[in-house]
Length: 391
Image (cartoon, rainbow, N blue to C red; front, side, top):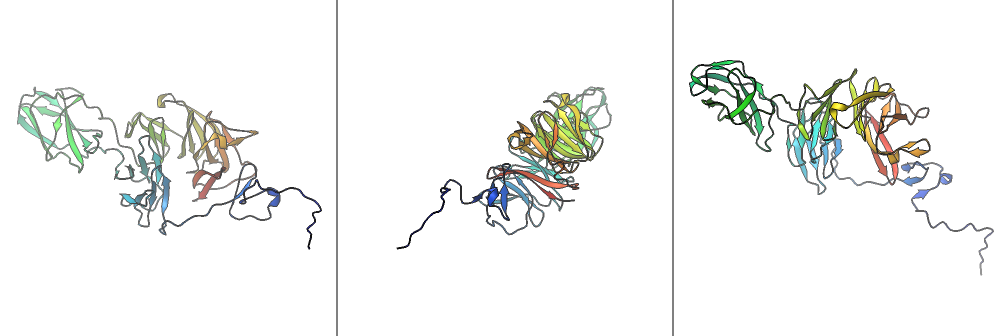
């Protein structure tokens, strides 16, 4: 009968999962995740859902947005249902922002839109492209100099565009007959009129068939959206404290509070000294990166934001991602609150809610990338900041 003799016995490791190794066990490793503590874990596999090469992937909560092989923007639902929300967004990069009401705004810098995952429409309501023409008519308007204005109202939800205004029109016979008023599918055309010699516009009615006859003074309430605009097709879309943010060149624009489809382009903007490459809200403000430096706008309301520049050097376009401070190690501890990660002067940098910027990979990792596609994820409790270099 054979006997098995142990020279030494160190116990049985029945606590560790079979998918994990210790650093002492490592010879070579392929497709593994490494935690901040040095723990190793085999990466999970995947299952092919669709052989199409999708681009511009964005997780929007209940659905995923992608572009397909024909450059159409499509939503994919958990049950596999696909809905086209824009027929052609081109081959370029698309920027997204998830809004508080669950909708997603999207833009490629040339065209933009908004979707709830089931339908798609333009983002905001564009101003009409003309005001039509007027001829004299009989009525009870007081003689004098008048101007009229035209807006579009989206039938689906009542969203009203900004207005375009006419030149001064002399009224001598008590009325105006407006013709050739602009029409748009899915929109009503709303008409406003001043008092004689006045500046403020008041609603007189809605046009039918591009025409409206005005024979009595306006009395249906003042215009409220005359100076507003639809958002421009910019880049680096974000949501901050109920406002939608969008960058156009070196200018950062903000929507009205809780009105992500209406912008006051004459007031709610911030000008920077170089092209904007990052817009990342955090707990107490907004980090704004440019081709020259990383800036921080501190505050809770747009009108009271105070700017500082915590770090100089170019910020890689598209490198900013939001991250919970618990997963950002600063010195011997972790950060707190809503933070961000970005590539600043080639170094992975943490942006803290206080506005401080902390280089994390200085002396260990640097890149010359000018534009990237970045993401942060937790993979089996392991925090990962991932970038794909685009140029």
